[in-house]
Amino acid sequence: MADTPPDRLSLDPRSPHFDADILRRGIGIRFKERERHDVEEYSVSEGWIRVQAGKTMDRHGRPLTIKLTGAVEPYFVDGGDGGEPEGAAEA
Image (tube, rainbow, N blue to C red; front, side, top):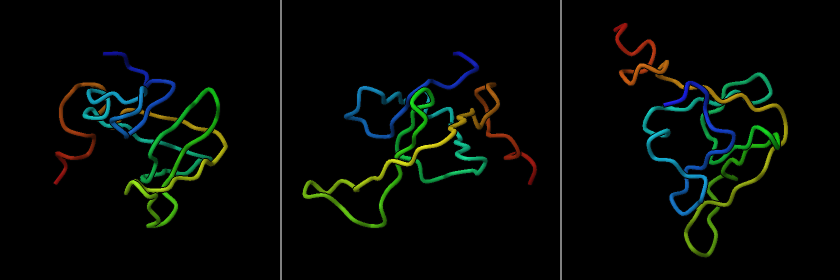
């Protein structure tokens, strides 16, 4: 597996940018120099993320999202060894 996250990734299984293996490995997102934990989809090359707009749902029961633009920096949470996330063993 590559050490760099993909340019675009989505949490929605219906999306062509969904990749279960990468999501299982763990992806962190730094957006505008701040850690974000509510990202539904991102694109590094286009410079945007999609986040859920509150608890609002569309007519199909899926969360409504808004697109925020800015600098996006994805990274792997587990450090690339396929084991536990960094800092998980320090308990």
